[in-house]
Image (cartoon, rainbow, N blue to C red; front, side, top):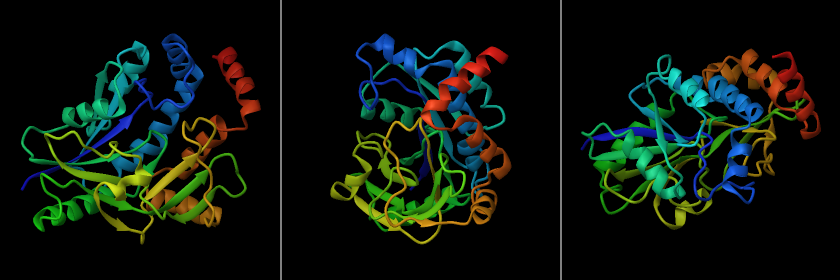
Length: 290
């Protein structure tokens, strides 16, 4: 039974819904979403955190689809497509505005190899990372669940890794925390579905997945890095019970477990993430210095 691993990253996709800070008009939404300074930060996170963690995977047989809107300015589309050369697993899918389920369903289908009967689809944000054996472990677990009949054409199944690192970029003194989620998190979770289906990992709020799909969960190893900063569309905070991690250990894990360059990643955090009151001044300084 053939199974393909496909991820979807909504890269500043302006769809119908799911945009928490939406102004009233579509023009205002586009102005906010495609602001030059904001897009500079989003590319910095994507190129420094998300893509390197996927490039470090021990299993490279997967596809990541970057879902973008058809109103995204050409210069940003070109920059994304240029990333497909150094990162051959990356595809860019351009769609008109649509609801979250319809748009992600089409994005997953865009990454389909036209051979596999099932897709194990994961979701990731442009500022997050997964452990370097995430794809390998995801495939092994998905294949086993399919062979056991625990996932089939009628019953989607979720694979969720619950332990990871929270990285508070606003706190340079204690940035890293070790935490085990008590419910599935969108990050490091995937759903096994047949290709022709309406369901995928974006179908339900990740906190409610266990109410709608069979869930296989693993809280043992560090499997994700979730960043916190002022650009988060969701209200991310360090959760209660998270255990502070010594910064040298956090830096070492960024490199050894997630394939990141810790010096570069932390430099990006220092440059682009700061208290909201400081950001406008920084962006103005950058525009003036070119």
